Structure formats: C-alpha cells, structure tokens
Amino acid sequence: GRAPGGVNGTGGGAFVGTQDKALFSRVRFLANSSTNGGGGLGLSDSGSGGATVTLEDCEFEGNLAEGALGGGGLYSYY
Image (cartoon, rainbow, N blue to C red):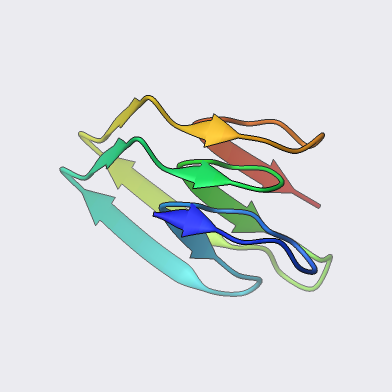
C-alpha cells in the first residue's frame, strides 16, 4: 500500500482514524510506504478520543515513511 500526500499522508498499509477501533490479527505489513508518517500503520488522535488498535501476532517489515514524521512501521500522532 501507499498513502499519498495531502493533509496527513500517513498509514501506507492501513490508517485508523480518531475514535475508530480496529483489530489486526496475523497481519503482515510488508513493503508499504507513506509520504509523511506511518509507512505500515498510521493511528490518529486529535484530542477527541483517539484510535483504539489491537495488534495480535502481526509483523512489520520493509515499510517506509518518506516524510519528517517518521515511523516506518507504525506512527501514532496526537
């Protein structure tokens, strides 16, 4: 996956927004990229109840965050 530019440009493999809930079980985040942060997985918390994420037996490999935010595998911002 690839997250393009724009407002956030985060979460190349997956993005979980504010107040959203997600469960990832046995997911392999492989070779994803983003133009900002969270090449594999991006999580959002804008102060009104953040994202809730459960990761069970997941792998992050070869993900890339091209922007200044970083977090090649995973990035959570507030």
